[in-house]
Image (cartoon, rainbow, N blue to C red; front, side, top):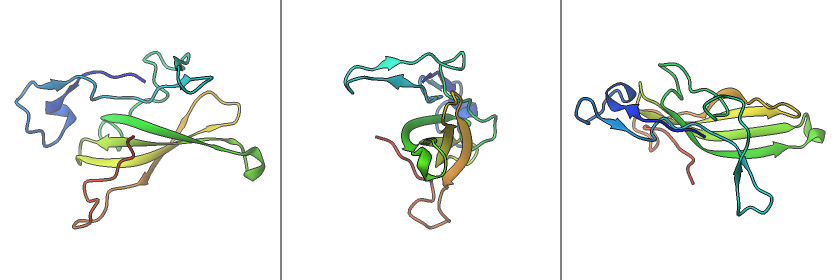
Length: 136
C-alpha cells in the first residue's frame, strides 16, 4: 500500500498534539503483493497511481484517515458466486473511532469495491465504544 504524513490538526478531531504536528505513515492504504513461497513477497502492479487498492473516503468518512491490516478470504464459485472479500481496519477522524470494513473483488475483476463498515463501534458504555480493529 501507500502511506503519507497526516497533519494531526485536521486528521484527528481531538488531537492533543501541538498545532502543525504531522505523523508520517498515518494515512495508510491497502496495497497488493504476491508470493510463491510465503516468505519472499513482491509488490503487484497497481490499479491506482499511489499503489493503493482503493481510495480513502473523502472527509468525513468511516475510512477517511486510513485503511490498514487487511485480511482476504476467497469464496468458491460453487457457493453462490466466486470472488474475494477483504476485511480491514479503518479510522474515522471525525468521531475518533475505529471500524472494521469490508471490500470485495469479483472473480476475474481487478478492482476492489468497498462495501462499508461491518463491525461498527459499540454503544456508549460498551467495551468497544471507541471501535474495533483487526490488526496483526
